[in-house]
Image 1 (cartoon, rainbow, N blue to C red):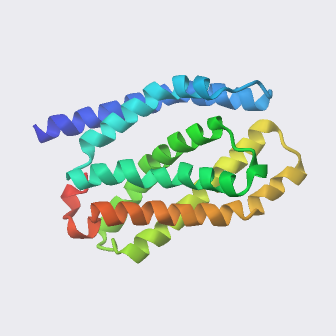
Image 2 (image 1 turned 60 degrees about the vertical axis):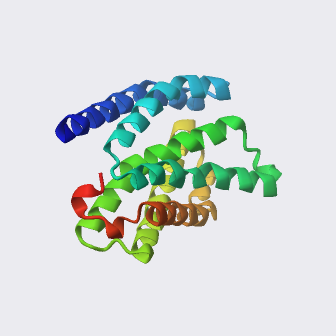
Length: 198
């Protein structure tokens, strides 16, 4: 029974990842050619893939605390962006950005967060401090990579690449640390044997 649920979870994650590839390329092309993007369009295009991914992760995440942690921890990403917009309206954050941030947060948690937690747990390094530091590094890397891809897709000039040294990278490290710390506080991977992380 455990093997069947594990296999089903992996299959659902694979389907979700494949379902996200076409919307990713459509969004990439829209950004390259400055085509209009609507929040509803983004939601309708990514919803099936994100749904499969989350269903697969929910099946795999054991015990229940890890499932709850997965659903809660990435919410720091849209909360941080929404809070930054509330404090600095000049950022011009739209609903599309918030929706993409939600999907991006869960995707980053799935691709970077879980492997990092498994790595730390396997080496018995799953303390809050270590987890927060790894989360900060992952947040910095993911946002840096995302910005670099976005700038390349939009064909930005050399002056636009200065954003890669922007304080947004410091903020991304902070959010990464918050996401990782929240996951740790809810799931407490330091109290679980390695076999029960998933």
